[in-house]
Image (cartoon, rainbow, N blue to C red; front, top):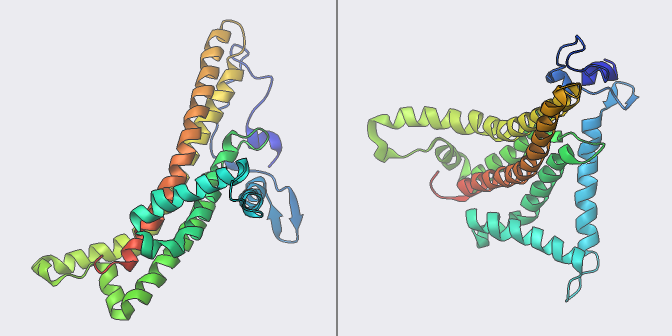
Length: 269
């Protein structure tokens, strides 16, 4: 697939010139390989995912490699971010005693997801890595494995299954129905919705920004300039809104991860 096909955009295509609006679609999320080694292909989203890890690790390394009693600006920002996740999410959901050991993991996941989202509004990159389902699915799988392993480690084999299916004899005759619903909800639907929630929001946000960006250029002809200006304003509005959503989705993803860990450690599902 060529670059032109990937973008599905002809720079000479404007309204009143006889060409239709080059509406964005799934092709907007397909990229030519940047490099190929045998059967392995490196694409732009993959590169951005790697850069996200480098940025997050590099920032916290720079912030805390020489910690000072009176923190500098970078250390102060790093401490604020770390403390936000620790106190605002982990302690609130899991609790200070049980949650402390999971703080590094949750902090890493929060900033990794946020950074992968942020590429959407960064010039030259302009693509949210999490708008491709494979990346949210991989992160959700990590959380899923952690949740299941903690459940059985905490409660044992029988107790773990009871925790997963919400076993409670007091439910009486509806217990079998609850067991079936909880089984499918927790073991199948939970990881799916955890991944899709992040993916769908970033996919839709990126598609809207691309659509209004293309519309701004497409309408830039004759009287269409008036509409192009309106479309460009929408680009700015959607970009600002997307900046907010990117942080919210990182927060929600980690919040749910903490709730799953809390459920694994609690006595009752």
